[in-house]
Length: 310
Ligand code: 6CS
Ligand code: FE
Image (cartoon, rainbow, N blue to C red):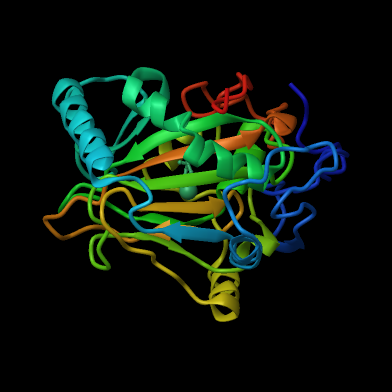
């Protein structure tokens, strides 16, 4: 097993984004572009126009209400309802339960187990944007439905996905994109995704180290790999907090390193979104930089076969 840190406790030589290497938290500069435009990537002009690219570069996210049709969103929500009925007591690890109840919090790997989610993950309206922002063909690093059920849906504390994917999955550089699609109405009051605009320009290196099999805990309630309160306050003061809301079919595209989270849901109205994570085929996973065993395939795919745009 490669060591995350050498005998001196320093991070691996090729680790551009050391975190959880036993020290204090640190604010580091981002070393990767936000919108990737490698000379070698000569593709048809992407769907995003220059002002949208500028906004994504600056803010780290782009929200489009009603990006998919209501009918499409309704069909996906119906497929999700059937899945929940069918797998309510399924012990499979792909079904993550809420920390304080037996309610399902997340279902991972939906693009592998459901034709409609697989089709959507390969849809050129999504893949076209992912390829444009990441400057290459893309593959699916992860897919999941976060259900945030009514009354029982607990919070997702502030975090950068990239920090986890780098330390626990071995994602080398910041060249991945998350796409969150509303399956139910995301209201201001039922725990919509919150992002800190501009937070993706800094890498928050987290203190401490990573427990073995951390995903068995972190997917229910993340406590390692989260920034301290002073850093979160600093990021929020710099760029504020945005919580895009909208009907089923609305889509939030966000950079892998943007600080985000969501509050608990005490309303009767579930806030269920499906997430597809596109990684550049030139950024495939290596050994986890945290020095632990790689997380299971249903959380972090090691199959970098390009998706969509055939
Ligand atoms: O660890 C992960 O990969 C998951 N955890 C969070 C809180 N967001 C990204 C992803 O679903
Ligand atoms: Fe996340």
